[in-house]
Picture 1: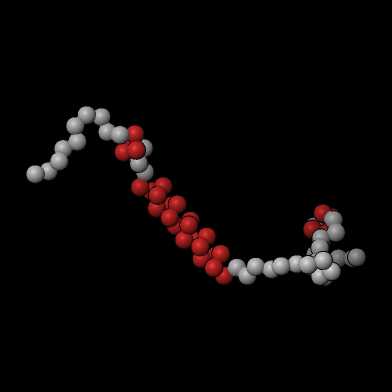
Picture 2: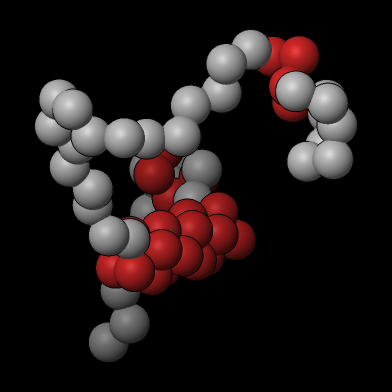
Length: 66
C-alpha cells in the first residue's frame, strides 16, 4: 500500500529547495577543507610581526619610495 498525503502539505515541504541544500553542503565542505589546512598562530607580547603603518602604503608597490 502506498501512503497518500491528504490535505495541505506542510510548510517545510512547501519551502524545500534542493539546490539551496546542495549549495550549503558544498560551502560547508569548502570551509572544512580550508580549516583543516589552517595552522593556528599564537602571538605573545614581544614577538615581531609585520604591520601596515597606514592606508597610503596599500596603493604603493614594493619599489616605491619609503
